[in-house]
Image (cartoon, rainbow, N blue to C red; front, side):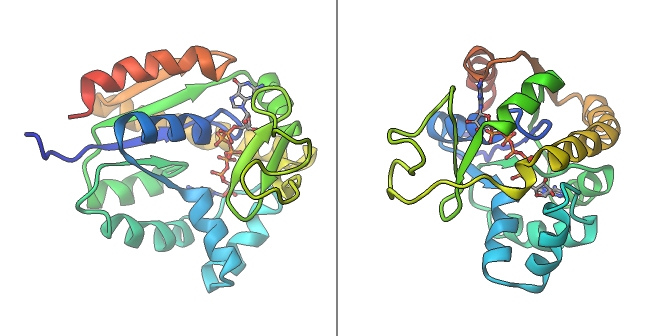
Length: 215
Ligand code: G5P
C-alpha cells in the first residue's frame, strides 16, 4: 500500500489557476506535475512536427487537435509508470479522456470553477518568462523587479494566447468541451469541483481533500 501510485488530473478554464495550484500540489504531496501546455511549448521550441502544427492552433486560442495531443502526451505518461503524477491541462475533450482511460486509471479529478470575468482580468494581467514557463500576475504574484523574471532576471513577455481575442476564444472552447468531460468523470465518482475567485481560498480545500487521498 505504501508504494501505491497516485494519478490525478486538474481541469479548469484558461487562467483558472491550474498551473499555480499544480505547483502547490507537487510541492506538498510530491507528485510530478505534468503540464500539457508545457509539453506543447517544449515541442514548439524544439520545432518538432507536432510543435509546428500545435503553434498554429495555440496562437489563435484554439484547442490543438486530439490526435496531436495524444501523440505528444501518451508516450510521456507511459514513461511515468514508476511515479505518482498530476496531469494539468489534459484531457480537455471526451476523445482525450477516452484515450487516457485506455492507459491508466485515475484516482481523482479536480475541477476549478472560476467566473468568466475573473478569468478575463487575470489573463489580461499575466506575464510569462518564456524559457521556464514561470507566470506572474501583477496583483497576485508580481515579480520582485517589474518586467523581469525573479530567477533569471530575463525580460517577461505577454503570451500571444493571452491577447483579448484569443482569451475569449479559449474560454468559449473550454465551455463547449468541458461539460461532457465533467459528466464522464462524475459518472466514475472521482470528480471534485471547487468554486471561487481566489486561488488562496480554494487551495485549503484541495489540500485537505488530497491529504485524505494521496497514499
Ligand atoms: P495551457 O498552457 O494549459 P491554459 O489556457 O489551460 O494554458 P493557463 O492559461 O496556463 O491555462 P492556468 O494554468 O489555469 O492558466 O492558470 P495559471 O497560469 O495558474 O494562472 C493564470 C494567471 O492568474 C497567472 O498569471 C497567475 O499568477 C494568476 N492567478 C492565479 N491565481 C490567482 C488569484 O487568486 N488571483 C489573481 N489576481 N491572479 C491569480 O495551454 C495553452 C494552450 O495549449 C493548447 C491550447 O491551445 C491552450 O490554449 N492545449 C491543448 N489543446 C488541446 N488539448 C489539450 N489537452 C491542450 N492542452 C493545451
